[in-house]
Structures are given as C-alpha cells and as structure tokens.
Image (cartoon, rainbow, N blue to C red):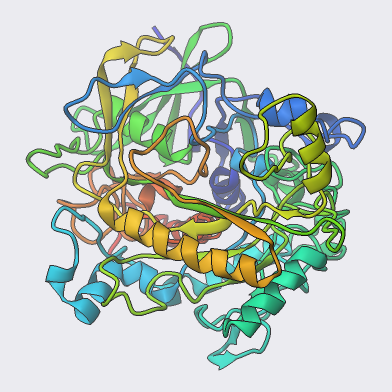
Length: 592
C-alpha cells in the first residue's frame, strides 16, 4: 500500500520547460508546489562543465541525456492491421529524461506559430473548400488564437533572451525579419546571432531568387543577457555542441539557465527526482483529482495528495498517464470516437546536401550554434497558394547547419566507397566545403484518423503497465508537401554555387529508425468541443477540472515550426487562467 505524504496545493508531473514555468507562476501566487520528475537532477555547473560537455560519443551516440529503451519504450506500427513491436533503439525521436527535460538538449530554435495555424480547419476550409482536404484528415482549430497567445510568446522570449530580428512589429513589416510572422508587440530582447559564411551565402542566393530570408530566432545568446527573473546568461561561443548537449557556458536558454535558479530558492517549492508517477488519483466520482501516486528508486510506492494536478510530462507520457488513470475516453479510430490518443502527429523533415568546389569554398561548419542560420518562410503554413498543388501544409526552410562534429559530420558525394582509404579521402576533401543543413526543410504533419496512440494489449513496462502503442504513417498529403518543399530548397542550395545537390526526400512508410525530430504532438488535444478534444482552451481537462495538461500533446496537429515557443506560450496562458480565474472560483473555466 502506498505511503501517504502531506498534502500540497499543487503537484506537477515533470520538471521541464512547462513544469518549471507553472511552478514559477504558481509559487509566485503563494501556493505550495511539488514537482515530481522521472529522471535525475541536472544542473549546468555540475552536469555540463566545459571540460567535458562537448563529448560527442557520450551525448550524441550514447544518448546520455535521454531515456534508455530498457527503462521504458513504446511499441510501433505503421498500420492498424499490423502487429506493433517494441522500439529497442531510439531512432525517429529521442525521449528526454531528467530535470530540464527537452530544454536541456534542444537546439533553442524559438518560433511562434503563424496566426492561421491556430484556426487551421476554418482557414483552409474557407480558402479552398471542405472538399479540398483529404477525407481522413482530422485537423481542427485550437480554441485559442495567435492574439490570445502573443503576450505569452513575448513573455517566454524575454525569459530566454531570444536572439532575432522582428519582421512584423505591431503590424509594421520590418526589413530583414520574417514578413510572414504574426504581429509582435515589441522586438526580440537580443539582436540576431552573427551569421558565418554558408548562412550569408544562403541568404544571398534566396534573395536573388525573390525570397525574403531572415535569421532564425534563437535561444542561443548573441550577447550577455539579464532576464526578467534576474538570471544572467552569457554570450554563445559558437562551439557547435547544442543539440543533444547541455550548455556549460550558460549561453543556451533552458530551465537551468532561466528559471530554476530562482525557483529553487523558494520555500514553497520542492522537487523529487528519480520518481516515476504511475497514475493520477481521482475521487470516487472520477471528477476530481486527489493527487498522484509515484514510485521512487527503492521501489516504494508513495501517494502525494494535492488540490491541483499539473501534467507536464513529454507528450506521449501525458497520454499514457491519462489512459492509465482512466481520465477521458480513449480514442477509437474505427468509430472515430473518443479523445485520449486522438490526433497524434510528428513532422516531415528533409534535406538537400550541397557539395561545393573545395578549392573555392570553406564553410568551417564547426563554427555553429543550435539555432544559427538563415531561413525563409514563403512555403510555410498557408503562405503560398496550395490550390494548384493538391496538398495543404508546409514548413520553413533554411541553411541551419548546427554543427561540424567529427563523428556525425562526414559528408561524401554519391558513389563514394562506404569505408577505407577512398572514404577517408572523400571526407577530407568535402568536410569544409559541403552544406549539410541540420534543418533544411522543416515541414508540418497534419492529423489523420488512423494516426493515434493507445495502450498496447501485449507489451508492458518494468512496473507492469501497458506500453504506449504508436500507430503512424505518412499520408499522400505530407509526401507531396515534402517533395515540393525539398525541390524548392534544393534550388536555393544550387544557386549558392553547389556543383552537386543531393536531395533527401521524406518518403513513406514512416521509418521509426531514422531521426526526424523529437516534436511529437497531439494525443491529448485542446479545443472547444469535449467530444473531439481532451482539454479546453485553457488546457484544463474537460472531465477532471482540477487537472491541467501541458505540452505539445495539446496540439491538434503539428505546424511547420519547432514547438517549444508555442508549448511555453500555452503554459503561460494556462498559468494566467489558473491564477486569475481558477483559484478564485475552482471548477470548469469559461471562455472570457
């Protein structure tokens, strides 16, 4: 029987970006908050000192910062009539582990979604007609708008010291920024990062082709910065060890470098690491959460009572806990009913590798940061006419070469031997003169009736709980979208002066062994209709009003951007609703 602990006002499951944001906001309100984290404690000074932080073998290939499949995994299949099998080695995505979550290892690409992304179903139907959309596509509006979230995007960008160039300032288009972005209330807190040679060459070629390139918004500091909480960040040193790595320079925005130094000093905040929440407890009516049950490293089961529960885990684990706790109706793809597991989505990523004359071009790819680069947005969202093309969706694209790390960065042209002296010679000849964008094409993934999450009927984890079963495949719409965008991107790489361009399209079937992004979305989506969404516009459970569910699991579909900026904006939006509405009148929140 679980040992019962003293009651807290708030129990937060997970201590990444969203858990940290909610803990900071609610402790400021005077609430007694505890955060329960599955993974270990991680801190910049002790875990990522510059003496060993740049260890490619340890962090990129041995995946030091991520869950091990031996700890927990998922089962995977492409189609509903297939037998799902456990994922034994991470490939298409990398589930994070530990304090800071994905905010430790991310590249810090800090985007705002387009205004049309939040009203996608309405926007596309009005522009193209309902019959233009695939019959099995299940996209829907979010229940919030860009205007609702703008001040919260701003709040996160100033917390992080985001480096960038505004493109739309209060409705005025600004030269050098992204002209397609929604209007922002003030400029970025820091100027863009300095752009090395390959990025400026990409921008020049893009301009000559009629596009409007802009520097990628970056959570890597272009200069020293003091954030609104009084936490200092240092300027980026362009070491090229951002993605997969913690930053020992305090130059990359993360919970450790922006929030936790303040949060940890508060007497009304506590955290517990290496503790796995096994279920959200509810009262006999099933309409009120009473707290959570978790298991610590000794195997002991503990119950943490709480008046308010915040589910802030990785998107798939949010869905798993809701299913295991019996909260919300599980999604049935055959009947197209239920909400938990519905509208799961990933991303469509591809590249065009450019090989240049080694005697004329030296790109020094090792001079980089996680989100340095120049991008264009002409082919994102609905910024272009899809009518003649026969698909919807899109993505940003850019020369965003995040590193030149020696193990991973070994570009060679087609026809090169796979090993031996010939391969070594080709690596030597092409290392400095090849453009291998870390992003390239970063495309949307819209939701479908047969792409979803549920509990596997056969396989269980080390605690005896069913694993999450992932059913996912690319549809014709995403394949068409990716081919079109990849061809457009390759034209720019060619215009840069490449002697050879190798296109790497994203093709069906969905390959779980090939890395794409860790931007897994949906499964516990937000909306205005409880029959098609798990949570309301404030990220509050329709079924259990004192439960709020954070993160990308709330996205009804995935847009053509990295999700972190939107995940954080939604966390601030929800925290504002909790502070100013829920705490004054606990219960279901109404649209105000």
